[in-house]
Image (cartoon, rainbow, N blue to C red; front, side):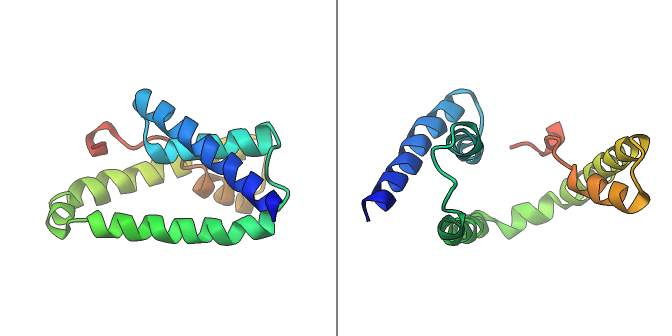
Length: 132
């Protein structure tokens, strides 16, 4: 039982350190949580051996995050931004997917693999006009 408390302490400490640091750098809190997870997981190896146990908490966290985003969403402002969301957001998806597919094809991968790589390589930041 003490092992779970130690793991919880590591997670909470990493979050308490990383989120204010990310905010000070002008980044979002979600990015701070992601950086904290990378640092305590793959980089330092402090956590990560108990993936089956953590997976349930991670799924619950994603559900709660989606719930909070849905609660703060205003349908009128969403409708007002529909051109930017669908037009420029769709354009970003198409262009980054095409760029990822081109790079994968240039590396000599099969077309099925290039499609998978291209559709999963959409990690560019959103266009400047869509940032809050």
